[in-house]
Image (cartoon, rainbow, N blue to C red; front, side, top):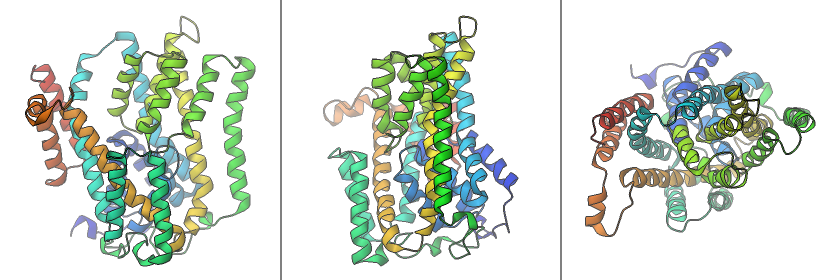
Length: 455
């Protein structure tokens, strides 16, 4: 029996899901594209907890929100399966392991300076990440691009961001407009799954399918929406008001909370879209850390599980540690509190978006005119992910730049990194190795190459 032919479990208990979300928090490498690929492989293909269409419908919604789309997708699926606490647990466990790891690595970084073995691990993982992102573009594209119209949207998206350098929000808006128009003129081309149905990918039953009765908590109610908004506001206001009253508006902790609240609402297009804003504020305006430290923090964020925007935890740690905000005898506690603080304010809106908007999104599942813009957005995101793979590939394989002309480019090519990237792609595409296996193997290979003086 093939793995995808196995019957789905009759139900999934809260604690079964809890164990999965906890494990996911430690293996969610590869940035948003790689993390979405892991979620699809684990929940749709292997465990069959939800159908292809339900997964894509949730993904479409998360793609248009500010914030880390993979973490929001996990929150959405957790909420879909086990109500509010299911969503909170899924979203929190997506972040907490990364936060703990980054606090530990940040402490090592500040206390002991550059760690030689980290450079080797980074060297191996970066080429693998390029291959992982390429695989994610292929996997999502093969399921979402089911007709020529959606292929055209994906191609236009790639050209728009790679050649014309259009802003990511503009690309999403244009794709949504195309989907809205297409949903009226040719609705069969814009149903979830790409117009030919996704049943061809569903080789068995799933716990949450396309046609079962709606769960009570997925039905939209104004009272529930207002309650979620009120609780979210209180969870933001309580720590912010306490810091203003006890520490003052100008205190570093208070300013971190306010700055990363604003950053959380600007993360359209993923972490790379908001990084310039974070650098401008944290490095140039507040001077919480230096440009070199920011680059090192980004490298740490790329090589730890969880959303790449978790680099903000590094910013919070370094800024609070170096300023000894809790006194000279407790720099680690000051840094850990700073990391936890900025993580809270950065991710709180993500939970609000999912828990407040989930019922509305579920209500639109069978309305093509409402889902068509989201289907078109998914097609556009395939082009954006492909561009991200190209971006990673160029910067990893040509760290000194392409130079001028083909001969110069060939001379500048980092051959060990190219070999690692090809090996990772073969492992993913040919031998169907998991992302975690590829990341682990690439990290060990990079460490060996660096310590052996080859790279």
